[in-house]
Image (cartoon, rainbow, N blue to C red; front, side, top):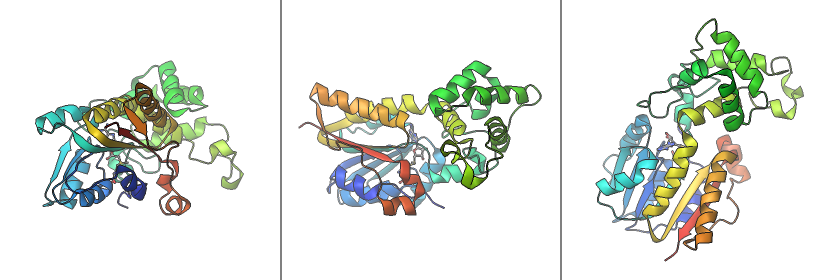
Length: 302
Ligand SMILES: C[S@@+](CC[C@H](N)C(=O)[O-])C[C@H]1O[C@@H](n2cnc3c(N)ncnc32)[C@H](O)[C@@H]1O
């Protein structure tokens, strides 16, 4: 199923776009937010869309083909400053970052993001990057692996899982998502035997959820890039311009919250969303992915 943009109405109402504006979508993904933002800045406006996944850029080029004012570039949003310089754009009116991965990436087993679809243990959003999840899983020392699972997945069984991974990889390289998911399932107490309705609260998700999250964050250096992206996006904004960031877990949200508070304390902007905006019941029902989405918006002082 193609990616459904989350919190679309909320993003549009908070960005306050109007014809003639220049907007940046740092994470074009399936192009859902981009297409709607573009409508609001036309006529006369521009949309500069980035994605570190060339497949997303390709998909959006097809979707937005021929629309005037659109530039789509295969780049990490942490490189936004250089991209704008190259385009001779001095400043922009709005920036959106809708971070994490898209349904298109998750559902393509060849990308290796999902424990529910068997594929190579890859998880790179940008296939030009060198290290895959397979490299981390097979090469990190047991202690480093456990620390990674704890730090980026908050996985309470990080040590057991790391040990189980090391026991398997002595015999053979762990190469697929199904192999890893099965190792984790066997390592987590009760995960295999507990019947669905009788699982404890912590086990309601697939037992490999946190392990996969942690690996994805590390493979794509998501937290470092988010921090850089939020800072570069803010630097690119005109006075009065707005930045909107949608995050999907507490490690990401903490970075956004921290940066926004710092700018507020420095007196350079206003936080528009006192509390993060979350999806309503209808959207959560319609698009389960939106359940964990948090939108924060900040405006630069005039
Ligand atoms: C949640 S999806 C975005 C969905 C999009 N807003 C839509 O409406 O379809 C996240 C996208 O951001 C991209 N992405 C994640 N981190 C990125 C980064 N640091 N730089 C550029 N793109 C990134 C992913 O490749 C993915 O395509």
